[in-house]
Image (cartoon, rainbow, N blue to C red; front, side, top):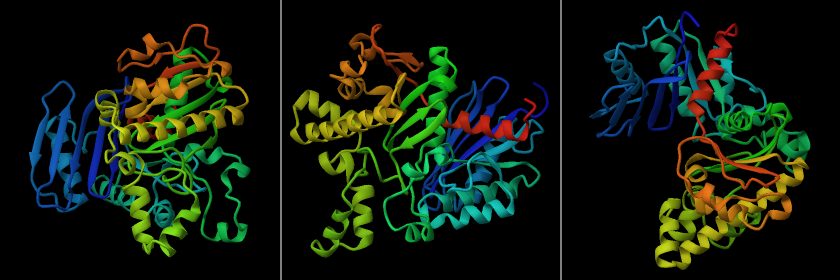
Amino acid sequence: MTGATRVLVLNAGSSSVKYQLIDMVDGTRLAAGLVERIGEHAGRLVHTPHGGDRREAVRPFADHAAALKAVAEELAADGRGLDSPELAAIGHRVVHGGKRFTAPTVVTDEVLTEIRRLVPVAPLHNPANITGIEVARGLRPDLPQVAVFDTAFHTTIPEHAARYAIDTAVADRHRVRRYGFHGTSHQYVSRATARLLGRDPAELNVIVLHLGNGASASAVAGGVCVETSMGLTPLEGLVMGTRSGDVDAGVVFHLHRVGGLSVDEIDDLLNRRSGLLGLAGENDMREILRRVEEQDDPAARLALDAYVHRLRKYLGAYYAVLGRVDAIAFTAGVGENAAPVRAAATAGLTELGIVVDPELNSVRSTEARVISAEYSRVTVAVVPTDEELEIAQQAFTLVHPSH
């Protein structure tokens, strides 16, 4: 592979920018870092070059433009600045692509306008993603800026699964439907699972469980997503760190009419003060497990049981949706590291052909690995996700299809 082979991946949040510079020759991380607390008096930049020492700076970053300028300076100090001829593209994580964006897309003015039109259905994420794109375009206007959408992998979900059973005209007017999120992770992990098993993704049915602070499940049939747990927003589905997941819509009306809570207060409750945090006062699964194991804490036990119950419920539902399941893949922070959660989620499912080997499950590793028993009909695996590499690969393939 010759020519420009590097991709800078940017994930711009409301007050942060995460970044990685990846060489697509072999997937090497040439640099990785984070700028956080943008707009505050004490911002922080952490930069780690490949083969070098971690550098940290605590100073104000007035806005995203200042943050990205600082990132450019750190990369330049490594001899890998934004002006490098080896830079092929900048890949941007964009949370919401609606129905239109089903694949990675080179950003034009028209594309940016459409991403802006989606802000009402992603008010917490798309504005920051847009800012990241605009600033990067200003720094390198000659370079392809590629948007990779969290929702894209889920656009293959059948209409009957994507639709909510509400008035069609109202739903269409306000773009209400199941979009799903974490799509970049689900896509990467479903393919990585096939690689782990030495199988063609087109012949494999996989249930992917992305369990981080945000959590989602997907049913992937032959490499194509046919169902996912998150919906119009990332609130629906599994119990999460601070989000409730599935809740009767009537709860919203009840809290408003009877409880006197405003719409914004209910939004804050369900998105930021629910899930593990709401049940146990703690959103970190490691602490929940510690309290269960060391203290037999009833609140932590309730939170863990609710979390696992919802997980098992979705496992069973997606087994039914797929009809045949070849593999179940656990990924993200909880999925990759919490052996007790994996064990509890799959316990007693022998009749479904799901049997986890306790010894294999207890092994800690950063590698993709099988944790099911030899006689398990369904392979259960732990497959570390790599959303940045997936974004880089999609962006690079788009701008250099010959590679």
